[in-house]
Each structure stands twice: as structure tokens, then as C-alpha cells.
Image 1 (cartoon, helix red, strand yellow):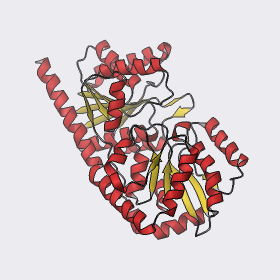
Image 2 (cartoon, helix red, strand yellow; image 1 turned 45 degrees about the vertical axis):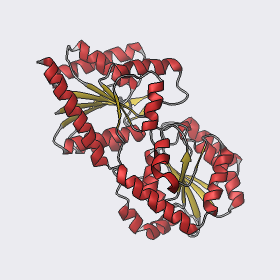
Image 3 (cartoon, rainbow, N blue to C red; image 1 turned 120 degrees about the vertical axis):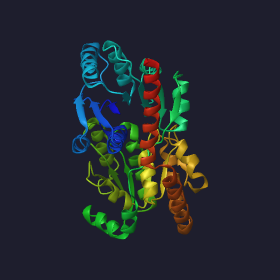
Image 4 (cartoon, rainbow, N blue to C red; image 1 turned 90 degrees about the horizontal axis):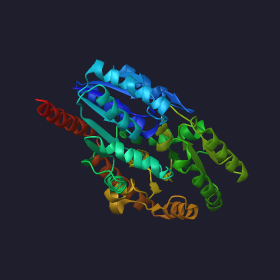
Length: 391
């Protein structure tokens, strides 16, 4: 089977999922190409992901289906139509509304009858309504829409998406055991690397540094947390390149609150899971997630984890059940502070039991090989259906 994956920017969670699915399909014997925008408006594909694709023998093309302006969109769509005519793909898998629209228009330009699968990762809560309407129309032009959580499927349907839908969890590709086995060594290493006392308590978050991820709220919460426990440090792990204005805002807030010696922004690091493994608490105050992969990663690394309760993360809350450590409303700094204090005051043995139970539940459900197989089964069904329809 020849598969074309189309995304906007090959970065962050959706970029990782696109890359991993492509690699998984390639390993299972399929021919896979990926389209992404490359660089646009200060945003760019992550070089690390592009390198992974090339090393895996996956073709990569740059076409900009991030921008909606007609003077850019239509020439790019014509390029896509030519590519479809040349390569004869069996199926197209898109990862956002603009690629969905482009794929349907390009297939008609090329007069090619080809199934289109869309994965709905998430929509920013600050998007204008006209954009939601436009993307819902584009998704409705696809054969099926896949969501990354059941709760987010309800959200998508409430926005007018009425074609057949399903949920395929983006399974974890992280193997936590090597980190867990070396936890004490890693804890010492990370504290030495960032100049922290060996008995320092670390709160961390793994996410791209941008407004949607809520880092500013966690910094503001930190002011009260430091008064509560002078031995606590906050370490943000994640790319800091694409949203420089927000990074400056965080730096100004850190200075304003006199937290320069308490808050560390690492930027991109080669192995972020070492820092998560070294932490005492993982806090994820995001405003919007289709699911929240970083939450799952922290949990399987057996780190106490609390997170904002939003559409996507409700699936995680449901799965871990009574083994959760509680959540909070995004943007509510007081609620974040109170939840952090509650976890830190909990009986250590109780926390350890809950954390291990939650990790086992997550590992039992979020298996990445299963994710790839589910997409493969769906692709095969759609391709067979279209082939029968063409006869």
C-alpha cells in the first residue's frame, strides 16, 4: 500500500505522531511519503523528525498547507495534484483541516478517486469560529475522521463533524523500564547538570513552550510553592524557538517574581525523559489537548502526575480512575498551588501505589504497535472498499 501523510508543521505532539505512524507503516512493508510546510511565519519542521523520516527511507515533500491565503494555498494544491498523478497513492492520511481541504480538492483536480482519512488532533480554544466552520467542512469531505480520545470526539461532533468517526489512541513509543531501573542515578545526574542541590525537589513539565501549554500559570503558582517549600525547583523541558514573544513573557515573569534561581527553561534536549525521570512531580497545566501524550509519558515513568482537566485529558482521568492524584481547571493558579500541596502532603506509600497502578493501566492501553495496526486495518478497509466501488 502506498500512503501519503499530510500535516501542517512537522513539530510538537502531532508532528511526533505523524512521524511515528509513518515509520510504523514503513516497517510493516508499506511505501510512505510525508508532506509538511517546512518553515512558515517563524514556525518550522523539527530537523530531528525530518532526519528520522529520511533515515527510515520515507519520502518528504515540502508543501505549505498551514496557511489559508488563496495566493499560497492554490499553487500548493496544484503541486499536490501533480504529485497524486505521478505517485498513484492508495490512500491519503491528513492531520489537520487545511490538509484535508487540500487533499480533497487536489484529488478532484487530478481526477483521482482516493480515500482520505483525517486525524483530528486538537483545536486551539482561541481559534475564530469561521476557522472551525471551514475545517469542519473539510473534515466532512473525508471518508472517516479519527480522534485521539473519546472525549475529543464529542467535542469535534459538537463542532459539526458528521462523517463516520472512530478513536485511535496515539500509543506510546517510550520504553520506560531503562529509565525506571536507573532512576536514582538519573536523579543525581540531572541535579548536578543544572546545579541543583542533591536533595532538591523538582517539579517539571514536558511541552513546547507556548501559551497553550500554560507555563505562565505554573510560574505564577511557583511563587507560592517556594514559600511553602524552599527546596522546590521548577524545570520546563521543551522547544523554545517557535514562540519567542511568549518565552520573553515567561522570562519577564520569572524576574518579576524573583524566581531566577528557582525556574529553569532547558529548551530542546536530546533526552527529555531523563529530566522527567528525575522529577518529584509532573505538572501539566495545558489549556487544550486532544489527549496529552506528555502526561502519559510521565505516568509510565512512574512520576506523580497532575494535569488540567480539559476535553482530551478526560480520557486519561477515566482510565486511571481512583489512582489519579487529582486535577485542576486550566488557568486557575490557586487550584494548581492547592493540588501541588495536596500531592506533596500525601502519604508517600499511598502516592507510590497509585503511581504504579496508573502506570500499569496506561501501559495496558497505549501501545504504539497497536496504534499502527489499527490505522493499517482502517486503510486496508477503505482501499478495498474504493477498489470495489471503482470496478
